[in-house]
Image (cartoon, helix red, strand yellow):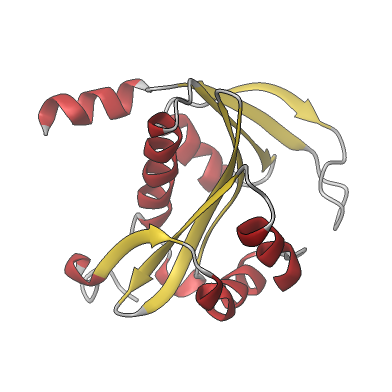
Length: 167
């Protein structure tokens, strides 16, 4: 999908449902070298009362998703993925905004995540929304033993406060 062909009117962000899992798994396997299993997503949606997930739906097709766990007053981001054919259209940004807003609505004061040390695109997105590097988890990723940066943000971050003022 090119930016010129992308029609924002055809995009919606909504809660993930079990019926979305075929599309979610397609995005998952195209996005990660160590993808989650379908059963892991079922568990998140059905059994994990702390989990909250959203999808980006474009013209009736799920093209991205994001999720987090709400633990006390902290949101722990589990994953954000955008179909490779839809990258570069700011969908990751829209998904991050959606889960940050959801976390704040649930009383969240902070959010955290782990991100591969080599994933500079994601790190730049997180920094744009106020996330700061606070540590490293050595060998965090099981597919290649890559380290993960630990990032945290206080909510609401400056970027979102500025948007609220402009709205």
